[in-house]
Image (cartoon, rainbow, N blue to C red):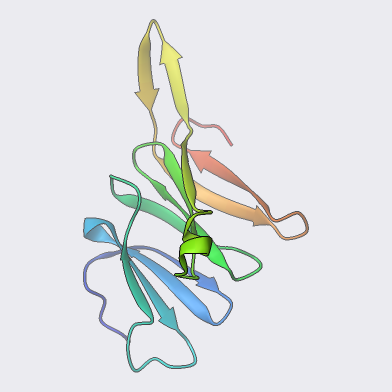
Length: 126
């Protein structure tokens, strides 16, 4: 057991790392080969509570989602070149009568052959 800085909301193994999404928008990355201390600690690039995290099949990063219908793609490499590749996008939103309904993104799953991913939301869509 390893104490986390806050309530754990999501967890995913990413090769020899595991990525933990906690309350207060923190992302903790642990190296399974050296559990003496946390490998990296970051603030989520999403504004609202993390709902799901999944590590890339190629072990180079992770995707996280929030309760606000957004998904972020992040890279473990902290160099400026790698960090320029990260991005976020909106999804699981339905517009009715000029009112946008925003749904949490509850699930993320990768296709290992194509390195693509799908999301599932509280709107009932994938």
